[in-house]
Image 1: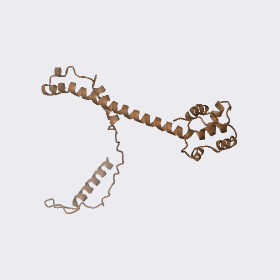
Image 2: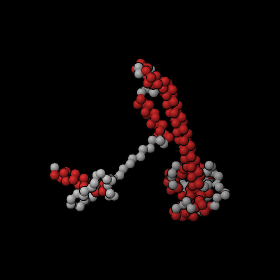
Image 3: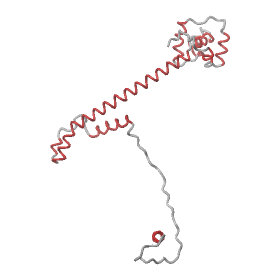
Image 4: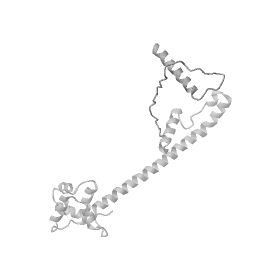
Length: 216
């Protein structure tokens, strides 16, 4: 990305599309003013790259350079396109770096847990067989205690996306069914209940229970 080299393959209209009305007017008024030297344009581009507008660049230089000259350098040397390319390169570099560090972290934590499993696993198995507490002496091969083990495991799960917790929420609706008043139907308990009889009995039982609660 060289701000001193204009992009001949790029139509000028593309660079013009980035300009405000005030910048276009300043550019038009500066048509007869000599263009800025390429080296000076490169120095001013550093300010543009750091978020300064053409108006701010002129003010920071005590208006030594005409606003139209600065806008002309912006158009001719493709400042906007070069700034976009620079930003994209930075973002891609950061993304790649983050991914690399994440993979390195996963590898490191996995190795740490694997080492703890190998060093302490046999002691646990021996204790499960014998039940003798002394078989557990010298534990915590690479992790000082179980809390540290848990922290390492949690960190590993976070890095690999396995720590996502789903919380289930909802409402329970209780529907009260009114059972018509009247004598309870009689059923022959020595025979299978007719269709719908079981639900009627359950309804009566629930109604009696509600009455008992109300009477307390």
